[in-house]
Image (cartoon, rainbow, N blue to C red; front, side):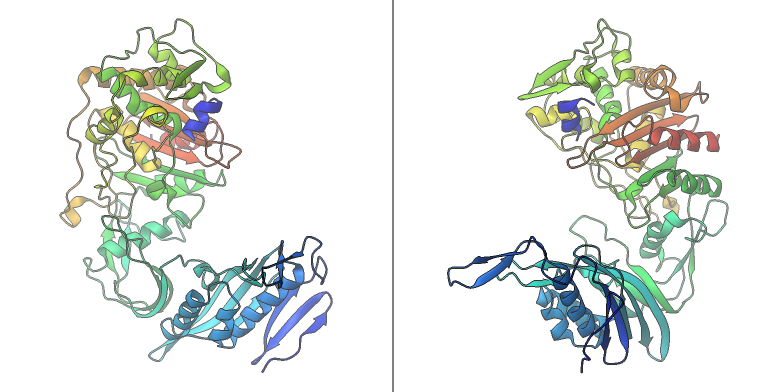
Length: 557
């Protein structure tokens, strides 16, 4: 994408100093070590300012000494059960008091030992060892977390910046740690062949398995156990609640059984493929039915593949092309403008490297991912045209998918002026994830939207979302022609080499504020398989996400 086009897409004992480290021994023998590298005095950047009352207020970055002191005070008090003292060492004592009180009262965690690691600037990592005890049952608890020391603006005091993740890295605002009989029985999730799905076998599936338990635990016939778990905050109206997460099971309970549509072979391959990039996500599905065959993320803390909300870049041109063809504004083999620049709504859009195609067809513009070929048509569209096309034909942006676990169903808001034009090329307010884009290319392939699903609707008699209309036969034929040409001769050709002839693909790059490299997107089909992937900060989609998606299509052939 070009510059504007891409942006548019876009008792305490006294401490003893030992060998450069300070060991903090607090009632009961807990030891924390803090690096003194960088000097024990105030940093050179530290300075003071005077208030109206002529009181000196320190400003500037916190010094090594301040970090060490604030962290030591907080950790020692927390470990010793002195909640008020620990909370006072943070910049939000009320929230810290509630969390630390709940840590003992609700989570039933005792015998806490906190050991710090090496300071990195204002951050101090630390490990936690403790015991979870409930109704005569006990289990050890061990994990790592970190804190960051900040300077309070009003008085310059260095304090621990409060976040729920300080207490446990899985906690977010509104979440709680609770030990007791779990509200939801465990489930034994099975793949389509009857094999058990576990995180030991498939590391990416942690959030998926949590979601399956949340939705089907009470319906699958299991009995609840006793657990320490993260209880997530209530969801906003109309949204699905993020699944609770089990941290320690004091008694396992009896699991019920839930069968999914996942293919064990494709899931294993998807797990392997996403590890080739630091922040990659991918989904494989069957266009004719909507069955999800694989889902994987190289980062396991958040399911970007199902719940991500990212600008999809030029992969959005699949939907936009269907709209333009429907309205008679474009036709695959007819001439179509692809100039270097187009101005609309006060923004000047351009193509990647400012290329242009003289006397070219719409098919050539689509295959080369020409931004201006799409932006040039904005003046002929109504503000809600793209939104209606996405909702009615592709089943997106209505928040009504029910795949079996939480998912984000895409967003294509009604916009005007330059933002509307940017939406045509997958920027502006448009947001998608790999599940959405695998569904989009599936609809282009079959002509009709089939809502993706991970658990068959017959399991719980739920109703799947539907589109209000299908692609016309003319539009579908041309859309498939555009995608096939892109896969054989356009920006997707390198990745899709050898996969034809029944194939199609689209690449995308979406710039994001603050990122040096755009997110790389790729979505494609081969036969009755469709896949989509994104590599965050991956650059061009054909080079980053393309090989991942193509490898999955080859594996499933």
